Length: 401
Image (cartoon, rainbow, N blue to C red; front, side, top):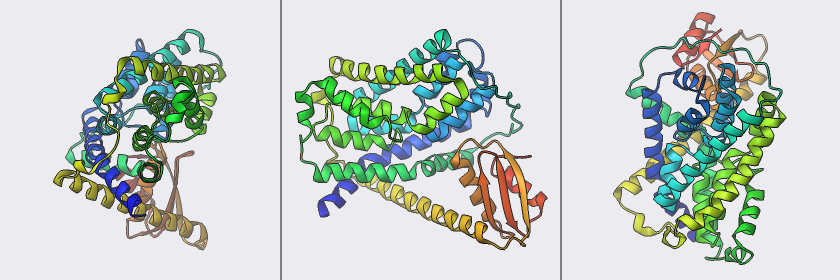
């Protein structure tokens, strides 16, 4: 058990500094880019290239990329641009790139970025050429009304919201990678290579596709698997196919763009990830890659980063516990308590609903609140009047109907 705890600490030392830096970079991008920048850029010509160029650095996992893709469809983006965005974005992100470089080396991280870009471009191009079948008829989105400038406080808030949105997957990734490092013998997976790299990649692909794995949180798992003998090409397949495929993404893509675009999306990821994994061995010398997370990484700034990350994860977990208690209270409260329902626009994922719930329940005149994404709705119980609730919705960064 002590070996397992030591492994968890080693993973935190390797992960925390670059994860926190990546979250900060994501906050900088949020502050610098206008609110409607992405929507405008992905409409019109060269949409596929723009979608990949903008999607690769954005720190969006599948939970966030789905609603953004739907919003882009409403804004008039081409099907090819949307598919390119949905393929390339969840595979990477500023935080994922830095964590990959720390644990698997910069050559691997750069190759991973290029692989995401290439598969995104190919998938988007094929969709525009042959994939424009029956699609959903979505109403065009309204112009955003929030034109206020963003400052350092917004940067920090967005960085924390990013970490909060993936904290559960981070904990899972840390625990699983530590378990592999502690309990799986070194080189235990070398047997897969005996059957050829293609077999190892196909096995990894079959495991990764049905899973929901966050691009950042899956990196420690991949690093631990490589240290246990998994071919690096197969690890690349895991990091490409895992974040880009899950039931929620596939269902949303089918409903929005149709079966033809979905087929192209899946084929691009399957063929593209295996092809990139195969090509990796010819481009990168795997023997020069890092093969573990050792004690030599322990210094004052990695220790400080690890402690900060642990504190943040504990805070996020406690906030979710309070949110769960709030939801139970709302569903069991006496129906005679004053209840106000307000429509909310501008929410794109479950993290948005959680943020608004925290903002509402922090008010001393509100006893409980439940916020839903589809439809965008806030159900509030307490003594607060409608005007006060609307101001709280706006303070959280959303638009009340």
